[in-house]
Length: 218
Length: 216
Image 1 (spheres, helix red, strand yellow):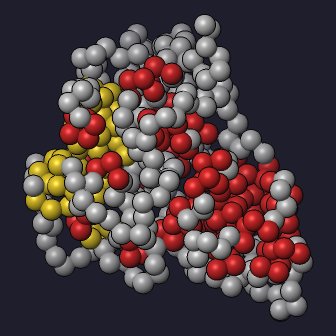
Image 2: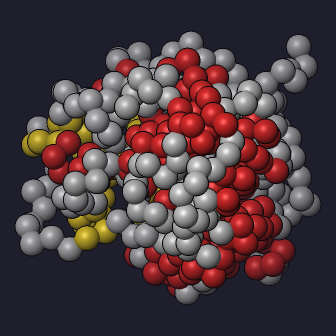
Image 3: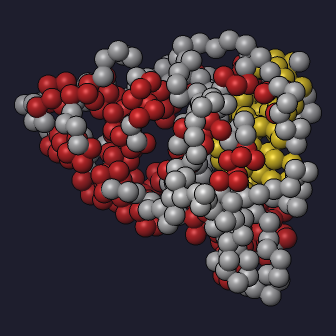
């Protein structure tokens, strides 16, 4: 989607909010939001990609003004209500409705196991990769209104493949909970002058990790 | 449901909002409160940039290890127990006298958790995500990282599940130090590419100039 989250290259932002001796979490509630969002994912009503998309769907003004963990909380509530795990009435009143108490799908030990193991996105596919390192490729000029990982600033631009990563779950499909549709994944390197124009720094390049359907031979 | 935002029904104070949701989720049996505590503990105290610093120190001290990191960082990090969420597919990039690598996620906030922990505020900020791909030298200067114009800058945008760890340049005069002492020189920012490793006296060559603290 052409959302406000797709920030790469957007101009007008000021100095970075660099903090000295920054705390891991600035408030206790931030860590609790992170924990709840991870644990609610274990109901498998949404996945990593659908979770990211729910943050992208926050109104642009909210996206730019809420803090990171406020966005995660808003996304958690929207996902939970959308999946029927919470009702709007429960969120508004703060009181659980009369449905029987559920059993959480994951406990502390289960989470520790998941944390250590992770959720690899690499998949075996029976097609050969269409490209190889050294190939020049052009990114799609257009995208779609769902979740995608083709940033706006590389669309239509030509770059060179520098790494091949095997096939990975395609976020565009995965975010819709309609299957993984794995595709070959490449790291593509773009010269800054090809992204930002002839006045850009000639000693600067940007890479993005792009799925096969995002690119075509240049 | 882009135009339907139930989160707006919550109280305005974030701490109260979170408490209200946590109470609901626990009451309904949707989350295990002990699991919440386990996650808070893990990401507050157990998983952080010291893990990455030990990797960098070992890479500086052990060329065989560095070679294996180059060939397959994921498997090599797994030997050190550095696996898991947001570190499933790792790649290392090495800073030299002539090439400076720096990592971003322009679309959200992807970051290699097993080696660095959860990301700092600046990494997640709109300012960093917007600017580092377009004007990296200006952004790096805000971190006190001043590079000669001839140095090549490579910005890595983490748009997939590949997570990048920068191996900073080994500081001059550190040849006599063991791995533990070397790890003390490796800063979090140096492993994202927005800093340098400290010198053997423990001084940070990046003279940070945070927003709002400009001397002029």
